[in-house]
Length: 143
Image (cartoon, rainbow, N blue to C red; front, side):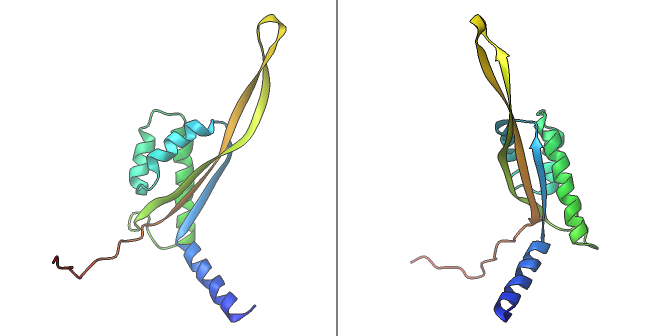
């Protein structure tokens, strides 16, 4: 391996160390319903996101809360000796994709049949430290 590739590899490993990923595959909830819950917590601090999920009335929030706890556990495993409370963790990325679809048949009037599609989804959460905004020390004077 060349020096440039090796330096790039080391930089990528360091970048991956500050984030943790958790995935939930084939969750038996429709992607549309899961996206409503995902939109609630996207970009939130982890403690606030857990509070919102715990007090949400939607069924999908139960699974999402479990997944977020798994991502936190993964982050703790990667960063031993650092407390989750001290780190300023944020839900950096959350994506909900369609999973496999179970196709069933439901009887309809006059001997016909309608197709029922039972949808599922795949959810991916990335938790990491919040990038702090750069502090501007110069003040631009208005003319």
